[in-house]
Image (cartoon, rainbow, N blue to C red; front, side, top):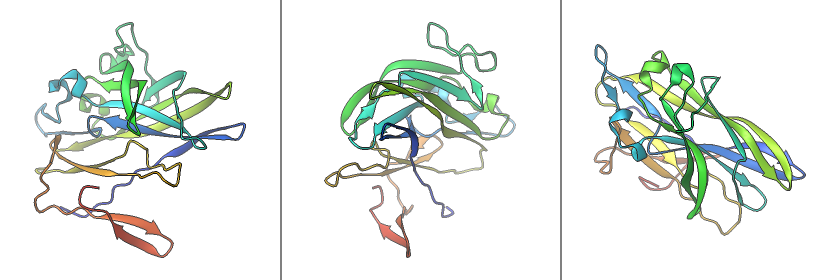
Length: 229
């Protein structure tokens, strides 16, 4: 396998009365990557073949930088390639070109720092290749959050949907951390995990595959970590 670099990051989404809010988009149940096989309608992974609670779900995690407190948005707007998604009473998307492809899920339990928070997420209900035009797409999340009695807007935190043609053995590397790569207090410990997928399946035994963690320093790169963390 060719050597590739995978990175993870967060963004400053709002500043209000001296309070800075960082945010990042997280995808539970695997990365948003789907491949198609030329000359067939086979998609890998096949999202529609998965149990609903195993399908990818996109959420946004917001944190007060000064206190580390998790903030729950009071309003969310999901867009797919710039088109705002509307939803019916059953939560399913009823925007014409994306009808039934996504579902707005409320009360989804998100684990951050070993605490559980009920949040609203966007679950993928159908395969994404047919609506993609066979190239990469993007999901964005905008909304509002209450900070110190004030309503502050945040705009278009994004995650990419990777669409690719299947070409034999393919690997996708996914970096995850429930802290969003952010440490608030000096005593905190941040653990990043590397999850390697092939054909939509998580590879638990890496065999002869070597993962290398690197830290960017002013003087260059430094090696750190173990295979998985």
